[in-house]
Length: 479
Image 1: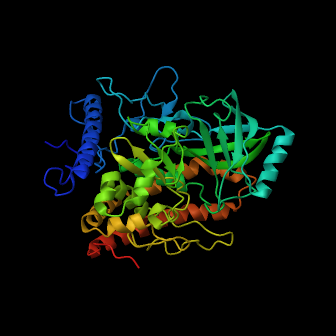
Image 2: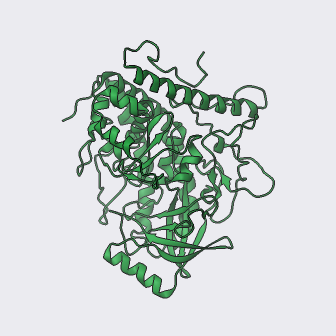
Image 3: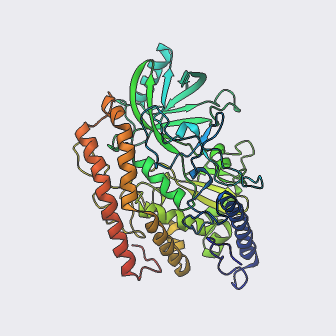
């Protein structure tokens, strides 16, 4: 009998596919089923009346009632919190929700996934991180920005009275901005085993085109609610050598700790943009990605990729829509993780161009057609739709599955709930935005961007509803 909330896997016994594909599908189904058992056990054990805790279902074998979504009282200190729920009132610098007990184990002591976020991403606070460079190193950082270079520079990071030696470099591609420097702070450049509050790196993101400073904070929770991998994120104040640099999105980096938070099997290869190996660099066995790049037929792809997860991740990007990500053809803004049991999984990253309100300095929208971007055929104007994406959705079965996943993503995409999250988060960061000496937009532009997001939620939801009602989208046909 299939577990409630877990869709039975199609065709394991009856499909005429080759044996290796059948074995792969069985292995993936088994991994999902065991994960669902752990989640269900945890939920049932935590219910006061003996009934399973309710949660919205996901085709990836998880529910939106994840381990880290329970904010409960704990004794002593903890380094894990709910970093995506915004149901509690929040104020700058002060925690107004209790630390998650780390409900990362069920009643039998088994670990459930995903694990809670590190406390640095607590939604109830706007943490302040102080970066201190020597005068010479700060000058080097500023020269790096002018030269478009990324070099790790020694510095000290201070957070809530804690001081730790670290390294920092600039970050950004299109978002590169020497008026407001964006940083990656690394704790493991010198000592590979060094961590700070359980993380090896901090990422401070403030692209000039996100006048709300909320895109990533609002976008990533939709992946969590779909039972998909996601990055923890809140907003943070950054101080450089005693001077307030501004407000940033504080975004969890995709690395080994990210994998360990999401998966019981976290030793596979992780690739940035499907190319650059980010784990197991010493072994450097990339035969898996080479096999994926050589695959052509849908049977070959299905043997290597967890296509259930892939189409769910693509459909969630399409719902937002994520105009600068894999779904749109941008081959640099995604990660692939080769899960030892499930095969390749698509992981979302860099969601700062979402919800349609990204704008140029003059105020005009970068993507005015984002509300009406077709969930299947939309293509970023500077990129080409990925061939793998096209091959999968040209298959009638997998195209139909994509549409099913889009329906589920639409169900999770509540304009009312998203607007409430925006209201809560924007109120929390208002003073920090106003005090930001380096923001490349006025407060009027910030307020307009926040209002635009809420209007966008309604318009996008209506467009996708109409698109779904129209039907006849499969098999996909691409220009």
